[in-house]
Length: 271
Image 1 (spheres, rainbow, N blue to C red):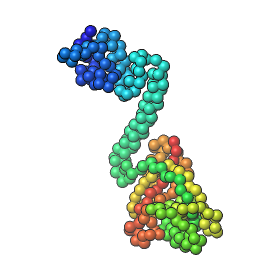
Image 2: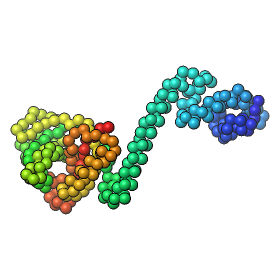
Image 3: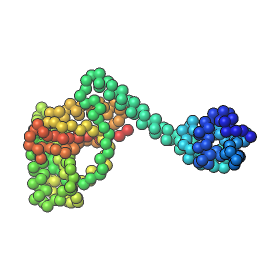
Image 4: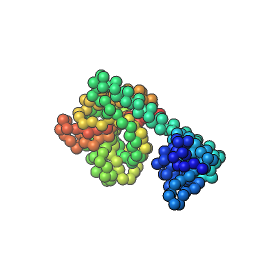
């Protein structure tokens, strides 16, 4: 029999940890002297102690190790646990690699004094019902005219808007030379209906997007969009749909161009 100190030296497990293993039932001493509470371990328990150390080094927690060594042996259960742990580590590694890549990009942007450094996030938008109105405007600042038309049409046709703190817009195409910006504006609604002349109802699916949130006038949208575009390419994503804007303060509820817009510029993406 081995005293706890001797067993600690032979197994590399601290006395404090051996006492903890005893407490949780993972590695209990073979004997305890009831007179002085001394713990004694058998030489055969060195094998179990070794299994515990190896499993800990592989990243298993004590609860997992207890289940793996349930009957004191390593059997087919270890295959299931190892396969699960490999998947967990691979997912963690993928997240870490992505974070490192984004940090390196931030360092590069810092060197170039990019004002949008650390501004792009990946966000998931839930599915929602919307009503939209599409039209052609000459400048981005004229978008407010489309919002006025949409609101009038909703009131005229009794369309009930949802209590949502935001609205959205998609630029289907932009031709600066011809001053032709094909734009569609959307409001979230409680219930979809039949398309009406000038209005269309649709279900926007859940969407994952690269997003930059900012406050400012429309002239900044172009440079921010270019920054998002390069971020998406450099971080290994692909475009999966048309870009859209989400407004929290927009031309339809703020007439001072110095104040609007509180906007999220969003590019749908996928790996």
